[in-house]
Image (spheres, rainbow, N blue to C red):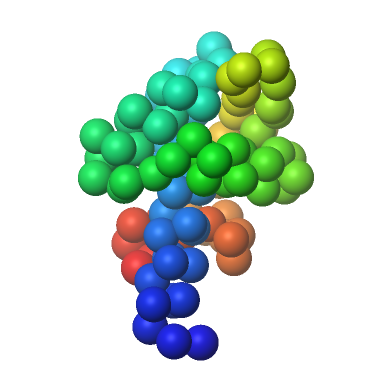
Length: 102
């Protein structure tokens, strides 16, 4: 794997983590994909809605979030497994990177 691929993989894992942190801050309410884009762009992660949706689908498949497709936008709510990941640094997932792990 070349350096560019490793950097992109690290970026995707960081996007997933930032989504979990944002959903945690919004608990117990769902957060829309448009707001997630704005928050991550403000955090200097140049991300598109498509990238957010791919990350949300991954997190949904891992049972960290629950997705609700509202047609033109998606909403996500943090599930207990996602809360455990955010709150407990000993919980590890190979597809998500905490900032200290980079």
